[in-house]
Image (cartoon, rainbow, N blue to C red; front, side, top):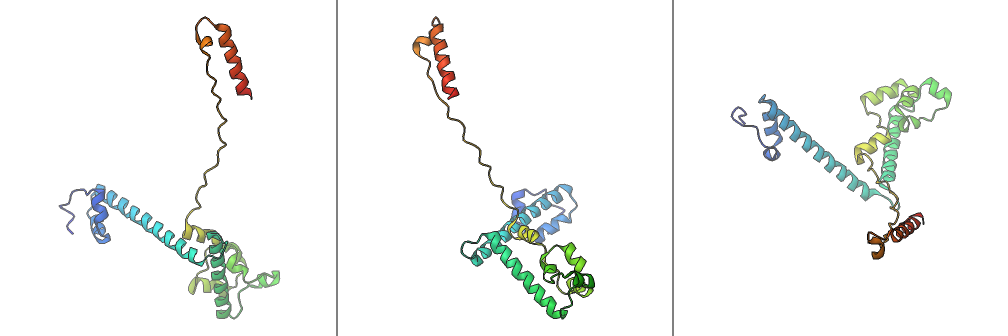
Length: 197
């Protein structure tokens, strides 16, 4: 694709181009075109991420047990993955998962796979740290995993209290005439009574 002869494309035009065409436009050097192409790529990434999250949620729904929320199902799956990783590490390292301080402190080796990364580094043996670095990375913490799969939690709308009912008190015709101050005062006192109730 020759980018030297192209004017700045409209966003609608960019949506129809392939990724390879967009990459060719990035090499053109025109700042406006580069800005438009980067905006289109960002739009595509956001759309892809939304589709990926929706697919993940759909798959998660297929695995949900009766009465289980999506987050509970995801937590269960994450725990299953952590248990599986723990068993693989246990087999690969022949049970040498804790350092001497961890053994002395009575740390449960499984907790290295479900706890914080700081805790894992503190109590893990050198072999386990090397295994995580070279063979199989440690799982991300559950909250980070939940954000990757489901995205940020939806903001719930705060229920606002219903407005107080408004009483409509009509001005009597007699009080509405300009000369009837007493009738207008009586009407006003009635309005205040209704508001106070």
